[in-house]
Each structure stands twice: as C-alpha cells, then as structure tokens.
Image (cartoon, rainbow, N blue to C red; front, side, top):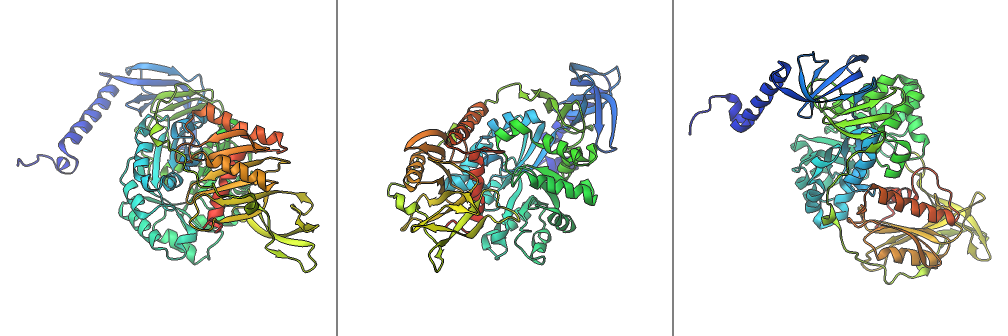
Length: 586
C-alpha cells in the first residue's frame, strides 16, 4: 500500500481532503474576484451579536454560508437581494421542541415555524419513537429521511425516556441525531437500570445529553446527579427560584414558553430582568406548541419581543434566541451570528425590539416573506400511516361513572380526583377534593364552579381495564363529549363530558381511528381530527391541520366551551405528559 503524503489524508481520507481543498480555493477565488458568489444581500442594517452593535452593510453568500461582510466592488455574484434598509439578524433557534408530537409532521410544522423566523430546531423524538413501538427504528429513519429538504435545520435527539435502550442506541447512530434526549427525573432518581444505560450511551457517543431536571420533585442533593454526569441543558424551570438553581448548577437553562399557563413565561422573564442574570445563561424554547398558536402569536420571535417588553435590552433578548442558543450546543461556528463561515440563515425585520420577520433565508435561499412560506415542502411521509387497531369493544358506560374515593360520615360530601389542564410545574395537576352529594349522587361542582367529568381509559387491557375517573378543569361543555388518544408511553384515551353514555360513545368512535380527537353530541360525530401516523401526527398539510383543530374548537364552542390560548386538542394532549409522570397510567 502506498504511503500517504499527508497526515490529513490518514484521518480524513483523500476524497474528503480534495473536497475541502476545492472549497477553500473557491472561497479564495471569489474574494479575489475570479469566480462568482451565489448571492449578495445588500442595503442592510446588520446586527453583530458579538460586539452588540448594528452597522450598515451587505452579506456575501456562497454554498449556503456567509463568506464575506461588506465585500468591495470587485466581487462578482449571480444574484442580489435588496434588503430595503431592514435589520438583518441571525436565524432564530428553538433549543428544545418536541417537534414530532405537535400533531403536525415535520414539513407541515415547518410551514408555520419558518415564516416566524425560526431556521433551526433542536428536536426531541421520544413520543414518536415510543408510539412506533417495535417499529421505532425504521419509523425514525423514515421520519428523518428527507430532513435536508425541510425549510429549517433539524438537529435531533435519541429518546432518553419512553423507549427501550436498544432504540436509543440505534437512533444515536442516525443523521441528524446529535445526542441523547431528555431523561425523566421520576425514573433516574430511583436508580433505574435503563436510565443508566441510556446515559452511558449518550456519554459514549460524545453527544449532548438533555434532561428534565426534576427541580420540582428532587432534593438539592439529588439535583447534583444530572450535571455531574455531563448533562448539558435543562428546561425544567418554572419560576425565579428554579432558574437560580439551574444556572448555579452550571446548566444551560432553556426558558420555555409553550407549556403551562400564559403567565409562566412572563414569570421567568421577569425574574431574569429583575435579578440581572447574564443573558448568556439562557436560551429559548417552546417545548410544546401548536401550529395554530405559532400562526396566531409567533414562535421565538414572539418571546424575544416579550422579553424586550418586560425590560430586557433588545440585543440581549435576540442573543438568547440566536448566539447563546447555538453556543449551548457548540454550534456557534455554524449558527447564531451573521459572520463569515456561518450558515446564511438570515431574518430581515423592521425592528429589533419587536421582531417582525419580513424575509427569512435558510442557507442563502429565501424561504418566507411576510409570514408566508414561499414554496411548498414536498416530502412524502405516507409510509408512516398505520391502520386502526381498536381495543374498546367491551367498554361499558357505567365504567366511566364518577364514584367517590371516600364519603363523609353524614353522606353529604364525597372525595374525588380533580385534574387541572394547567396543573404542571409547581401547581397541582391532580388533587383530592370534597364535592357535594345530593340525593345519593355526586354533584360535579367544586368551590361553587360546575365542572365536567374526565375519564382516563386504557386502550388495550390485559385483564381488567384500567380506568381513572374524576373532575376536570380545562374544558366546560353543557352536553356532548370530547375524546383524545395518545399512545406514548402507554396507549390511553382521555374523554371529557357530563354523561357516561355520551362519553363512552365518544371514546369508542375514536377507537375506530389510529388516534386523534373527536367531538360528539347525542352519539353523532360533530368534528374529528385523525392522527394516522402512529397516533401522533396528522397526514395533513398546515392548512388542513389548522382547519381540523379549529373545527374541534368550534364544535366544543357550540357545546358551551370558551377556549383561550392553545387549541383544545393540544391542551388535552398535554394531559398525557402529567398523567404518566404522576403515576395515573398502568
């Protein structure tokens, strides 16, 4: 075998070195005026996140990356774009998003995200992989197959929970997976063997490790465990005290805005401003957010604007959604700033204090204008569609009746479970409360407020079917019922209503689908959202999905529900996170 003439050849391979040499020579020739660049974006006010200044100028783009700032007149280029004096900021980054469990498939999700200025997503995959079960590895390959065709950059994480270690290990080898997804504190705090294995896999692959830290449940001593084994990021913060702990323990602290009550994000931003904590400690993430909310409110652009509104300097707020986000994953040589060598992911906005994405570029290609995606995303995900597998043929209405956990001595009060759709974090998700009993029947009323009933129903029973019945804050209908299904980590339905027969009929209608949500009245289906991709994603484009989720809301409005914020189907699906976390699933 001939001896290599270069030490570079020995570790990179001669073909790779040749490609790199061609690349560096091309850049040199462009800057010497001997070759054409792809694009010049000019007439800009460019935000330099490194010096925290704004300067007039232009950006030269070639091969998806910025190769020059303010090139002189000798530079040649094939196309130009006049920025009209707008501010140019780096493409926005969501550092923790369950992108596969928001009902939309990745392409449909991109139709909503990218026009809001988001060009990069660090995405969890745990619910999708869990829902796919034994098919998880092949399903993940199919999900990722065309990720490079998406209008945003996707960096994914192998499941840190809800799947066997074998699935995690296989997915860690896939592109675009860069590390281990969130570990669940309720299992790792017990010394769970599978968690040890997954943590070891993450460390051995030299990837990033995310966690759901457990700040609301663990002792200060146990909170040392995750950072001590090399966990990089934490999004389990809800208030000022949580944030202080997270940054003290050295974790990149992800400020989430897509979950909990609308006041949660304001509470956290208010704390950061009040305490004057350095913004470099923080990144921004949605965690969970519906496409409908993105369309109505925005995404990372919205929370940056909110941070400014609450007193944070605009450039610091922008850096949480750009440079500091990229740096937390060691991606700041590719993302997070408008500097030579970085991807030409550019957002043009008319303000730095209220982000208004007029134009959005990914890799120098114009993707969106005035909050609309310019070109359709043609990715076929149909291989992920499954056939329904019903499991509720023997369900009876009386199994959904609300029965007391305990009766008062005089028989006038009953203790029952009360669930709250916003009851996460430091709020109580499920409480045992006393409610009235009249004429021998439980009155679904607490503190003078009439409430609907809720039933959690196991889909596939091995022996006696597991069912939990209680009262519910979050949906208020005078008749009919609404049922949802989620398969991860266990296959369960949630149905809300006032009458056991109606609730039973509603959930049995849904049992005829792979998954989704259905509203019924008098036994008739009034609205339905099918989730054909393993019960977690709809086989729909963005417009179709929004129409279907809004049809659910409209049908419930006719029944008396007054909804604010996220669509009802998304609110109900968040219940499954807490139902699992707090031990209500079997």
